Length: 591
Image (cartoon, rainbow, N blue to C red):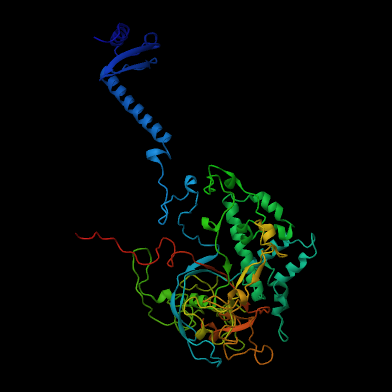
């Protein structure tokens, strides 16, 4: 065998004598084979263990070539890894369309721009896709109030709670208040707790035995998921603020921007200093201890202008959610109808165009039976009531063995069939507070998009305008919230879009209108009169129509009145993975 060492030829000869059976003495040693492949000289050391057959030289040469390819592949992979983020393999940075400067580049000023993100759906919410509808009266005005004149308006997309806020949810709020504002640590905190408690005495009636509801309705687990009642408009508003802060606080802890254990330990009994609020956090007012993600150079996606990890989140990062709030009257009424069900061909995904059509005008929130109160579908549901309401005098539930709505008072917040937006009990069960201040003619006076009455503009109260430290520039109230002040008329007089800070009674009760409201003398309407809608377990069918409206002072409550929350929708009106506006393919210009 020319070119093969004599020692290797002897081993091959021994193999032939033993007919392919390995010899332990012959093969427990190392041998060197030298062979020339093209112009490259390879020296391969091989070890042949005992009882392994010697492969033919042709197969050995083939395996040597495969080893060469493997070495080349590993070398290329190592080269790619070493060039990651540099040179040819560097990630191209986004640029400004107006200056040409790079975003997120510490060598070009360090201006940080978050990638466009979809808005996450908050806990308990569903998307209500906006649109146009006729707001107001849908049937005869039997009350003769003429305060819901029909008018076409547009409602932008928003989120809304799928159910009314239940007792268990409100007790969670009370538990948190008691934990942070512990009255045993500071007796002043007792006022904060008392202000949040629902008025359970609303169940009392002079000629009715309702004491069991007074004692047990809010607290007993049998009523956990029944709607909370006895809550004033102001208490519902404060609940929304608390809920906003808890959701954003949870997001920051879950993502590691807040040290959860240290933060929660510092909250207990700390009063206003232990109350995390989103506004205070964004202002940098007493920030909580940063978590692992915030202090990590590797895992923190947020950077300072110099490229170092940023320990606090800003709203521009797209991590925090907008505030929970009470829905406006227009939003609530639009959501209650669920008119998307009247569109025979709605758009269900990007690129699939829907029809701009509404087939029927509904009276009630359900679309299966536009004008009736019973389910008309065949099967076990046929003939069942679609809401919890009062059928007539002395009849709130029907007869034994065949109860019609199966509830003498309120019922579970997920009882009865939801409307097309997925919202439960938008008619019956309990009325619901909305954000609007009541005026009889609001439907005629208000804007035709995002209709709302109740604006009282506010801004941050600056204590020390010369300070850049949030803790000394601003101040907190007794609950730990950053203090806001009313915008004055003097600050507003030179504006074109509004000239007063408080415009609650704009065009209806102010000096420009001919209307005046002497509360308690000539009317029960004031600037604190808030709208409620929806009908309740104690109401006749007339009040189940979303177009009906009533009002109550914001410091008062009822056993038939609860609430649910809403949230602004940011971005595309049709929801996530959808675009805003119509997009057309670009065509090349013909020469």
